[in-house]
Structure formats: structure tokens, C-alpha cells
Image 1 (cartoon, rainbow, N blue to C red):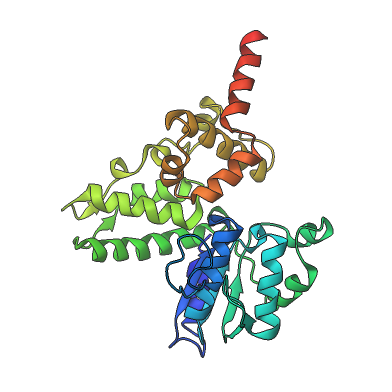
Image 2 (image 1 turned 30 degrees about the horizontal axis):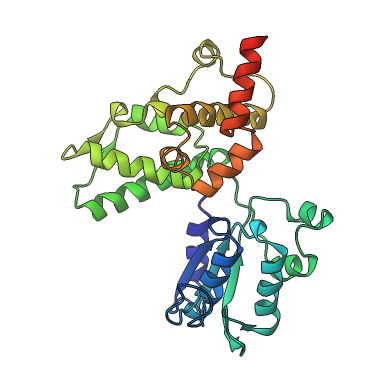
Length: 297
């Protein structure tokens, strides 16, 4: 959805703009690794800790720390985060003396934290600590007007990074880009643009044939969509979930269940893909069981 871009915009337009902005996806690590990443550790804290290591809180002192997917943290980790927010102190792994820090926290999640609180999965006191100013960021498909702007931004950025000449986008190509639902949101869009810049080479123009097949094949008319078996009735949410499940199901088979490879193709994080695999029960065992049931039916 571009959460990190929004975090950057807030940081660089705030009194802390001259200090560092760091980001951490909380779903990318287990509790022990996340503990070390956020709070650091001292030499000898565990096997392999051959020297002291600063955590992100210490590195972001006087700056901003963006915690993505905070809803995926354990209750134990939530206690530690609450301590930093309330007291401005933290304890590195293996240390006995707390350290003071001055950090602004920005947090994001795609989960309903209030429901998690009612189920005992998220601390209510931490929720009210982080929910001071709430910004709802819709998915990319819900803000079509942003796609063209983001496309131009990333195109200019990727061309500069790769030393490629400035490129323009044909009207037909832009129509295809706007029609596509972008289930992987801004990350998927950025990855697609990087791919396009590589394929375009010295060409000044970006044409539809340079787009991924998933974009060019996406139905732009009801008849084309219906012909491919794509839902064209019901709610948009149901249709998008159906498409998302289909893309992941077929992608897992194509990639031989290599989640890292598929996550890169879809333009989402591996942790995000695993969450969706669990959501739709698309793990290898469940899919094999479903296939056998269909064969015996």
C-alpha cells in the first residue's frame, strides 16, 4: 500500500527530518531475532554473539523507527515495545542495565487490532500508546488515481538508478497498468517497473509487450473476464480475494512451492505470502489432500 513511503513523507516533513529513519517488518523474524534486531545484544548474550550489536532503537536515537506489521508481534514483544514508549528505556539482549533512547515510533498493520485485543492477542495499553494519530491507507486498487503518479515516480527513480535514459509510457500501456488490480500493492508496482526498465534497454518508449503477462492478460472487458472464468458479479472484495487465491495457488504449483521465488514474482514479502497461504489453506499438504479428494470423487 506504500506504507513506508508515507512514513518517509511524514519523517522528512517533521522536526526529526535531520535524523535517521529506520524501518523493520515485525513479521520477518521470530521473537528472538526480532528482539536482537530492535534492541541489540551484548557480547556473549547467546551462541554467536561475538561482539556487542546496536539495535534499531539505539540506531534511530533522535529519529524515527517505522514498525511494519506490528500486529504480528508476540505478547512478550509487545511488553518490551510498551516499555520503550512509556519509559524511553530498553534492555539489549543479555544486558542488565537499561539504556535510554529518544525515538518516535510509527507503526502499521493490516490486521484489526481491536479484534485482536478482544481475543487477547494484542495489548490494549500498547494499542492506545501507538494509536495517537491514525492514518488509513487504502490498497492501491482503491486509489487508481495514485497509480499513474507512482508509476512515473518509480520509472524516473529506476531509470536513474540503472543509468537508463528517460522513458515515456504509451497510452495503451498505461490503460493496462490502470486496469490491473495490483494485489501486491506498491511493492508489486515498483518491482514491475524495475523489470520494465531492464527489458526496455535503450528504448525510449514503454509498450504493452514489455509488461508482465499477468498484466496484459488481465481482462479489460466483462466478456473477456467471463471467458477466463473471472468473477464479474458480487462484491469487489470477494472477486479480488478469489483472484488472489487463484494467483497464489497457480503460482505455488509453477514455482514448485518455492515461496521466496513466488513472493518475488508477486511483488510481496515472503512473510506476507505465507500469511496469504495460511488464509486460503494453500500449503502443500492441504493442496495435495484436496487434489486426491477431487480425483476420488
